[in-house]
Image (cartoon, rainbow over all chains, first blue to last red):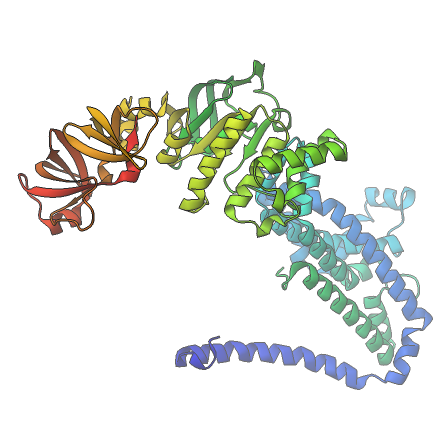
Length: 268
Length: 350
């Protein structure tokens, strides 16, 4: 935009793009305003401090944090391998890792449920850890959805790092593994934090796969999105709205953290 | 002694072919060639970052061919310096010493010595992203020297510096080399830089060594058409005698033509001058008449987009080059008298 000095053709173009931006901004502000107008603020804080909502907040923060840690443990080396190494079938692996991003979460949840009906799945359930309709199932569902996103975000981070840094590290006496930890990871620090925050926020909001694998059981597998679903189903709209505000607050904190470390909006 | 024997390597579709080089202890050796000649790949073979297809590399009687980069004891300064942006200058310098688990006192002593040598003591606490190109280069050299390498590898060290800084740092590099006596391999595409820095030099072209020798040997006796073309087939003038003019100047008389030069410790025996550095004009040039002569055009030969002119000055023939369009504009003909200006900066003295 060049302000009053823009040419007539440019002015029309800028007007069109800014109008679209203004529409979207007002659309989301409108939705939040409607929630704000609907909320009875005297009841709001007592709902938030209710046993059920506190349980949902604790369960959501616990499961999403565990799922994020596990997904980062796998995603960091996986993303590095996809970014920096060449191997046969790399395109196929890359495409398969993208699937959880584009396939509906409920479909992935259904696939997990089917897996636990196979003999291997049943053996895991019987001898190792119970996932179906249990808290580990929530973590598994969140992990399934966010790990691919973590790989995608981290791959972009590793792609942007000049391999020369690591190579210089090698000549300065560091093995390949040490150079990865002492050179590449510090260079990727902001990208790692941004990926962790975004995947964690995505895990907090995960519903489709979670409800399919872990079910929607009050005070048992009730994460925040499931609390919204259960309370809407019971026509307890005030409670559902209170939970929506909690999710919005978490999202805002995540976005502020993201901006703190990236200095700009993330594109995913 | 660094010995490179029958080295071959592949990088994508590029191949280094049968490279053989012997680099003496303490030597400043320059590998020069056009972009895409394979200079960086050759350096990476020495660092161990590039796998060899064939051949061996020996450093100080030790075969390092199969050693990983971290065990080769080579200091590497890449073209963009690759200073770690998450560390300050001091931390960058000691990065390579951390695996050696030295005491803080030993680290401080090492940093002090290197910072003094490279004149970067005042930069130690600085963020490397705030340094100028010349400062970055000196920090990168300090970091490479900190590990006490057997050989220092410099990849286009002046590549991203402005002309003035590059000139200053060439002198500085010479000083470091003289003080430390470390065997240094310097890669560049810049012939003037190579000639100024090298004890000996190798000309690399399309993955093969074309010629190895002292700069004057390469310059006066190019062994292949490529080398002759790359160095620009200079005018080589035999000097009859020299007169010291005082004020740091000497007059070298070549074939009756007096050429004024900065004073040299050694007597001037030969002068070399690239054809592109002989300026030709049909009008009398303004300014003082130093290194300006009248000559007669003896021959005109078109060569690609250039015109090559042989011009008789006194008893010598000088080859000059002119872009086609400028030549046509001046409408120069054989037998015509023209004015010549010899570009002093590009005169090479042996």
